[in-house]
Amino acid sequence: MHISLGDLGRLARARRLPREHSVRFMGYLASQQPGERLNRSLIDSLLLEVENHRSHRLVSVDGFPAEPYHVGLLPPNSLLVHLTAPESTRTERLTKRGEATVRQWSNKSAGSQRDRDLPAILEHHREKILELDATEPVDTVVRRILALLYRQTT
Image (cartoon, rainbow, N blue to C red; front, side, top):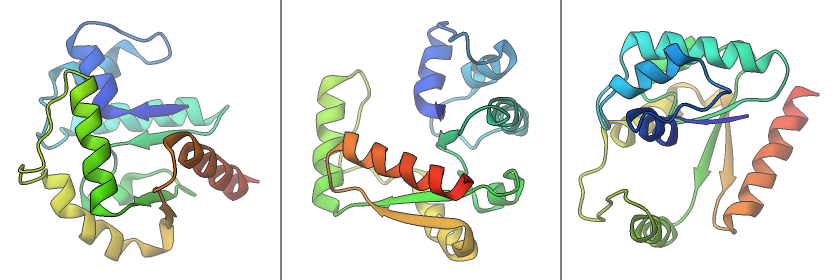
């Protein structure tokens, strides 16, 4: 199961609630403003969602951890997958995504707090991190992530 905090947050704010997630979790996401620090109630609810889904399938979360201290909240045996790609590839993908969706993106933006915290997360939790080159097509990258996760759990 893939949990994208950004995608689910947009659905929650539009009052579209996927069945596979609790109403409580989606309610916390609905109240979370994009770009703001994750509030503790949302974090606790997210961790409960992960625990519930993890009992019978692999779970990936996009958008968490968002701050260095969040890594310590992850369930045991969790891994962080850090996708890397050249700046030009990231800019091209984000520009296309901004053109194809209602999401706004500009390469002139200062970036989020999560982007600024990322180096600290990577440095302090190196032993839990798998780096993966993400320059290939998205479908290929997703397959490689799933293969890595599967190998780590067997």
